[in-house]
Length: 356
Image (cartoon, rainbow, N blue to C red; front, side, top):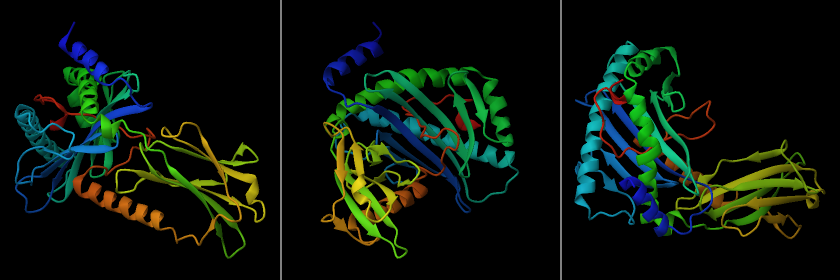
């Protein structure tokens, strides 16, 4: 039996109960050039599921990758030295890649960003689901790896330069495929074992329905969920038991700033018909779906008076600001409809994608 397979078995024993859903190991990396800087600033942030657990900033005085959670083992100096060395090598490849991109686009020095979202996902029973290797330049999609064909997909014409270069050395894609499907999954399981008390918990949502009357006589019912973890949740409005899709408005799930999440769904109704509507909530922390109805004695309030929604907006704004500064989430995939990323605990190879 291979050592990697033996480790999987040992971790399976250590994690007898795994929460349903999908687990992911993701790294977000950004190299940023600015006028007056001798070399670009490089920032990397690693996530296990929804929790940031490591970070690296080339401008930091420590010069090491740093833990962001208490559950990560900080006593293994070999681990931190190895990872810090690898991430410095990655920073240098990004520096070269950023220069090459400016040549490809015939651009002068200025503020430019070269980014990478990389990661793997597994199902609750440890079946590999998918892996990601994708890049962006100045906030726009540039190129990504297709693990099925081991080819590179250029998001726009200039990216063909990198596509031809990388596909000329097929071993680049082969190494990435092997990493994503094996080592990335290995480290994901290891991190989940370390942080199982935090990462594998299921906190049910607190839910309420609020009633909003508008000057034009229209009425909106909002189903508001908060204080839940993990972030996956389903809110559905029903009229007389039938799902309402066309008249329902959602906000994306937002971080609350305390490690939990928030979400709401609103539906427009005819005044006097509120009793026909109910909100169904499904979440891992609930033993069964929760169904609530608004009643006249429930909360009725103006649209902007909910403190927890305001706090959610502030938390989301702070997270977004941090993301822009750190390069954690600067571009959104347009075609995939999801979030793609990868873990990077490995050595870089000359000719690998960082060089473009």
